[in-house]
Image (cartoon, rainbow, N blue to C red; front, side, top):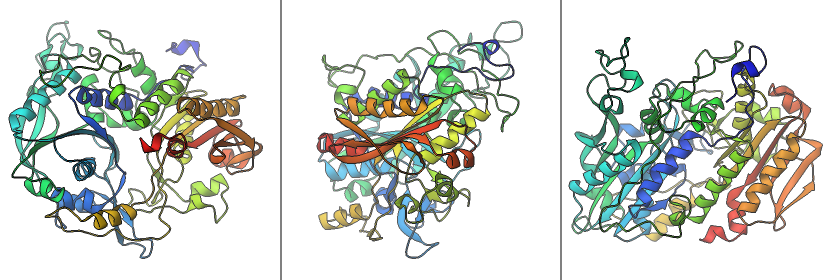
Length: 555
C-alpha cells in the first residue's frame, strides 16, 4: 500500500488493487484441508426451521440456546411479535442434519457458512460470524479418530507441529463432548515479536495471547449423540459419528494475532488489502491511522505473519489429491462453489474489495432507494428480537449493506473504493405456512420433510458491487459480465427504468431472456439520502438463477 505521504494530506491513500476478504480466504483454506481428507462439501439455508436447528440436535424447547438472547427468531407474518418456527441459524450444524438425512453412511462432510446470534459487536463478539463444521459417520469411529483429525487440522492451519488438547465440556448434540484448545503459537516461538522484552530478549511478562497458559480455545467437538443419529435416520447401534466446529473469524484472529473482532467485520477495505500484503516470515505493514473525521477511533490492527498454508502429508487410506485439480480443493467442490471462488478472484483482480455485510436492514432504506409502496423488495422477513429496533428486517437485496459500507469507507478516508459481496438474500413465502415440528426421536417421514422444506423461504445467492467515479457505471456492468462469463452464461443488457438507478443510466441484466439483475448509476435522490458522492454506481445479479439457467443448479 502506498505511504500516507503519497495521498491527500490528512487522508488515507487510494489503493487501486482489490482483495478478497480474509474471512473468505480462511474459510476456503479450512474447507480445503478437510477436502483433502475425503470430506464432501454441503451447504444449507441461513433462515432455517427450528426442527433442523434445534430439535434434531437434541435441543428441546427448554434448551437455553433457543432463548431470544441466544437466537434470532423470525416473526410470524400472520401474528406480529410472535415466532414463526423459523430462525436465523445460530450454528451451521443444521447442515449436518440435512446431510445425514440425505445420504446413507459412510459419510464425511464439511459445512462452511454464516451463523447469527443476537450479540452486540465488541472485541470478541459479532452478531454475524462464520463457522466450519466437520462430520464423519462410519463403522467403528472413536474419539481417537476425532483427535487425529483435529491434530491434522490444527497443524494445517497453524503450522506443522501444532497439536490440540481436548477439555471435557457439555454439548447437547454430542456425548462425550469437549472443547478444543490449540497450542499458543506465540508461546511456541519465544522469539515472536509479541514475546520480546524491552531489551529485545524474551519477555518475562505473561503471554498477551494466551495469558501464560500455553493453550487457546479453538472450537468444540465430540461423538454425535445417539438421539441425533436416530433423528437423522442413522442407526446409533451400528454407526459411530464425530463432529467438530470452529469459528472462521476466531481461526483468522488466532493465526495473525488480531485482538478485536470489529476490525475483522466492520467493512474497512484497508483490512483485506493489508492482509493481502502479508507474506511468509514478514510482519504486516504498520496500519494507517483512520482519518481525523471518522466515526470511530479504532485503528486497523497490525497482524502477525504466519507461514503459508502447509500441505501436510495425508494419512494412509485417505487418498491423495487428484492430479487434475487446479487450485487447492476446487476439483472436489460443488461446481457452484468453485465458480463463486473464481468470481471472487476475478473481481479482486479487477480492483474490487470483498466486503461481507450484515443482513439487517431498516425500512428507511427502501424510502432512500425510491421504491414504490408495492415494490416486492419492501416485503421482508422480520425478526422478533432484532439487535436494533431500527433494523428489524432481513435484506431482500445486497445493496443497502454494501452502499452503507461504501459510505463508511469514504468517511474513513478510503478514497474511491470499489466493493463487492456474494451473499444470500431472503424472500418471504407468499403462503406464510409455518413449518411442522416432527418428533425428534426418529427420522421424519418424507411428507414431513417436504413440509419442513416448503415452509423455508427462498434464499438465492446474489452478487453485488458498489463504487464511485466518472466511469463507475460502466465498471459495474463489467463486473456483471465477468461473473456471467465465468458461469458460462451469455449476458445481454438493455436500457430500463428501475429504482434506485438513474433513468438513462440503468441497464437490465438478462440471461436466456430472463432479467437477473440491474446495473448503472444511482439516482440523485438515493445518493443524497445515503450521503454518497455523485457518480456512485451499483450492480446486483442473481447468481442462483444464473446457475439454474446454465444447468449448474442441477449438478
